[in-house]
Amino acid sequence: MAKARSAPDVWILVSTLLILTIGVIMVYSASGVLAFREFGDWFYYLKRQLLFAVLGIVAMFFTMNTDYWVWKKYAKLGLLICFGLLLAVLIPGIGVVRGGARSWLGIGSFGIQPSEFMKIGMIVFLAKLLSDRQSQITLFTKGLLPPLGLVGLAFGLIMLQPDLGTGAVLVGASLLVIYTAGARILHLSYLAMAGVAGFVGLIIAAPYRLQRITAFMDPWSDPLGAGYQSIQSLYAIGPGGLAGLGLGMSRQKYSYLPEPQTDFIFSIIAEELGFIGGAAVLILFTILIWRGMRTAITAPDTFGSLVAVGIVGMIAVQVIINIGVVIGMFPVTGITLPLISAGGSSLTLMLTSIGVLLNISRYSR
Image (cartoon, rainbow, N blue to C red; front, side, top):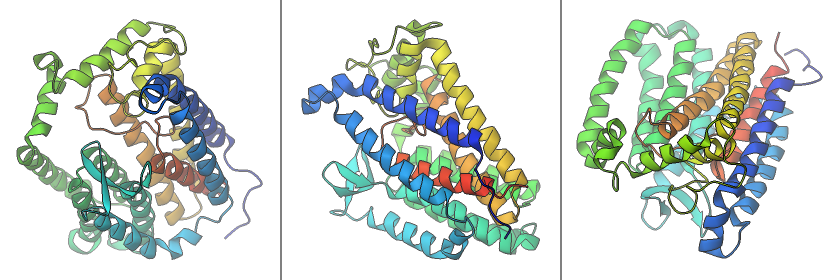
């Protein structure tokens, strides 16, 4: 492998740090009232966000300066550990239930979310598998089914929690890696039809998902039930106008909008900073995704290219779903906005993944 460039992609680094900074500010603005009411401390969520942001930055600079092909050696072990954690979280007494989903391992207010580890673990393993067997990817049985089987197994374990949002991000990013590796569109089309049938089955198995979909199409049909979150989100975005009500001036964060510091933090951004603030966030994400894709295209080997595609896909799919939910385009799924929403595992692992992307950019042609 050639010697690394003296510096990583500065666009990726700067856009990441700017998004993170906006996130820290907005987490405090969105959560101060809630934190004081629940913990008697206006800065409770801010202090947690700063802690995980610092840990994430340290991890990002570590992976940014660690040659990315090292992770190829540990891809299989990492995936096995991720599957082990997903199984452990389903065991009563070990897995912790938060927000109606058994998605956490930990003690008290501190914990890890195994599904977050699985996203990056699956991306790295698929990149290794498909770069080693690139000539077989056009074969349905030998090339396409093995990686799809792993993705399906991981998705199934995540759905047992249940966590449809994280599962959707995992599947979306994984399919992007598989497609980039050379999978035939015809094969993926057949699987997409099977996926639609499976999605219908998931809806039938859990009626609350059907309620979310009907609420998405007409939230005012159940304004105090399934449509409540969507309506309150729109009530936050509407008054924001062009320039917003002003930082810290949100009205919806006063117990009207559920999860204002996590799933619906973009609603608070739009309310306080207006169209200008929301557009600025989207522009920063666009820069991050654009430079990430450029890194994938110019990576020196297939493994690096596929890892970069997976990381960028993970970010893009998560941003699209989160903001789509906030503005009423998608049903409520319970997924955070990368680098901005309050969170521990998600924030730290996202910064760690971006560090890997930055290291790949150091070898770009």
